[in-house]
Image 1 (cartoon, rainbow, N blue to C red):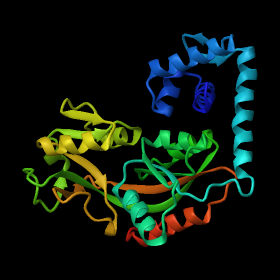
Image 2: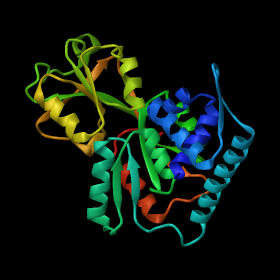
Image 3: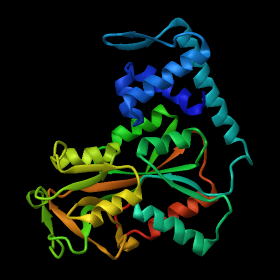
Length: 298
């Protein structure tokens, strides 16, 4: 049993359903069921009572969940003690060329620390890493209008979501030799003629729904940057991305064309643990990010 497992138990209880909790945690339902079974075997009693309508804590499960919440809260309080925050910059981020470039350039200009780290992962996992003290700053990018969903997910993990940059236009990404390369702008009708590749996270699925591509058979989802670029390079695949101002192109062998119909915009945000103040180094990173943006600060 580890801290993530405690988070999983709490999320299942809050959702009253293993399936809904799995969606909120961005893990598969069989995996989450397996974690619960393993925890219950380790504890020696069932935490949840199953029924056709969902799950609810047993009497002993209620006590176990209260204990899990106390453990996570005490860890938060311990980390909040003066002098306990590391001076390194430990970040969990969704896939974002902008945030990655800001991280690298800041370290080059303002100095690097040995324990600096930048990890890319799905948005809910970013929040989980933040809650479990593995990182100190979580960076999210999501469709404008979907912020309430991520605010709720952050609150469930005793984190707070903050606006950073708003209204960043979505662009279509493709290999330089793609049939659509050279266009000034693209419409949804043009996109439907080609296959897509997306990261398999919740925000990508939100984009797919907005683009009415969720049921497309010409869709591949991936979980890592290498596969993403390999697939884009291998044929006429498309993807969408939010590029900010001077962040520049991700790679010179790809091109980026504005999506004009429908016009979609995304927001960039960061999350912190409740009760903790930003370290000076984290403030430097956020200021550095803002200074490299020509988008509106929300």
